[in-house]
Length: 144
Image 1 (cartoon, rainbow, N blue to C red):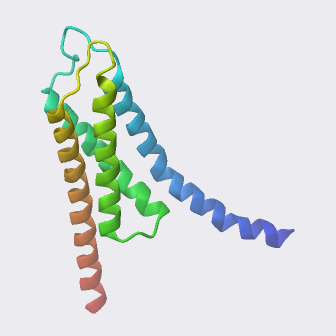
Image 2: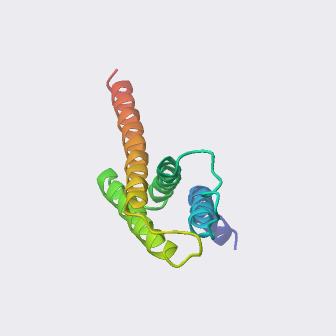
């Protein structure tokens, strides 16, 4: 049995390493879901920032947490991850705007969805640039 225990060790650690990225992602998606789908009130949402900025920042957070989660759990190329994150965030933006039409005190707004997508694209761009810079630094160190 010792061989079996040692054989499960690396797989268990791989799962834990992957989950450490997915847990923040799921938490952020849950918070954003609660914020955009809770019933509205007459005060306009209660956030101290403009609505479109709030949407952009929320989807920026979604993209910033989804990217490393996908990176940890897939071997997709960077471009594939970028399309997957932007696609998932875009689908979620359209779905939440459609669902808001049925929530008391909320309205559906195409400009909110556009701000959502802009935030997702910005989040992907941040990760893309970070990984490009890291790859360039690594290449520079290995050739020295």
